[in-house]
Image 1 (cartoon, rainbow, N blue to C red):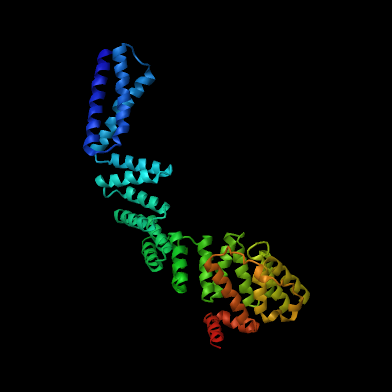
Image 2 (image 1 turned 30 degrees about the horizontal axis):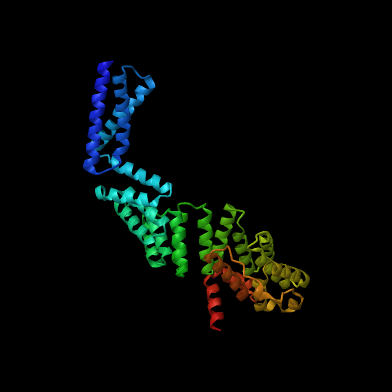
Length: 403
C-alpha cells in the first residue's frame, strides 16, 4: 500500500508540474482548473503518507480522477490536436455570457484568438455577444468571419441579413438572403424576410417566385401560404390570392386576417353572401372588428337595408371613432345614412390605435379595400371576365388613377 501511495504521489505530482509548465508556456489560465484538481489529489495522497492511514474507496476514486485521469485525458487530447483548451475557453466565455458578464466573456474570446485566430465557434459566440449589446456592425464582422470558416453556417447568413436590414441596408440584406436561399432554398425564415424586403421594394413577382420555391419544400406551412397570398394581393391576382388565403385558413383556422382578406376578395368578386359570412367571423378580433363592421355596413347598404347599415356603422365608430369616421367621410355610399351616424365631435381627441398588423398586411388590406371601391360599379358578368383576365384588375386601377 505504501508503494502504491508513493507511486501515486510521484505520478500525480509530475503531472501537476507538467500542467503548470503548460500554463506558463501557453499563458493560458484555463489550466488552473486542472491544477487545482491535481493539487487536491496530491494533497490527499500526502495526507495518507504522512498520517499513515488509508482513505475509503470513494475518496480514492476521486483522488485518481482529479490527480491522474482528468489531466492525462487533457494531455492526450492536446497531443491529438483536439483543441481542448479552445473548447474549454469557449465554454468559459459561454458561462460568463449566460451570467451577464459580457466584458469577461469578450476578454476570454479575444485572448483565445491570439492562439486560435480561426476558431469558428469563438467568432460566432463573439458575434452573438456584440449583437446582444446592440453592436450590430461588430456583430456582422464576426458573423462574416464565422461564415468564412464554415460555409454551411446558414444561420449566420440569416443573422447578417437581419442585422443589415436593421441598419437599413436593405439591398445588401436582399443580396445576402438571395445567396443564402440559392444554397438552402428550404430556409423558411430566410424566405419570409427575403419576401418582406422584396415587398418593400415593390418587387412582387420576385417575392412570389421566392415563396413558390419555398412551398416546394413545405407546402403546408401557414406563414408561407399566408405571405404568398399577400404578394398576389399586391399584384391584383385575386384568384391565386384567394387560393392561398384559403389554404392558410385551413392550416390555421384561428387566424382572422385570412378570413378578413377572403371577405374582401369575395366583395370584389360580387360574392356578397360569402363576404358577409367571412366578415361576421372576424368581428371577434379586436384589431379587425371596426373594419369588419364597417364593411358589413357597406354590404347592408348594397342590399338596401339602411337600418342594419346604420347599426353596423355605429358599432364600427364606437370601436374606433377616428379611423372609421375618416373612412366613412370618404365613401359616397354612406351619404344616405350619414345623418343617422353617431360620429363624435371631438375626433381629434381620439387617439389613433396602433395597429397590430404588419406593414405588408396593412398594405394588402388597403389594396383590397381600394380595389373593391374601384370595381363596385362593375356588374357580376364584368367581374367574371376580369377573373379570367387577371391583368385587367391592374389595368382598371391604372386607368382610374390616370383619370
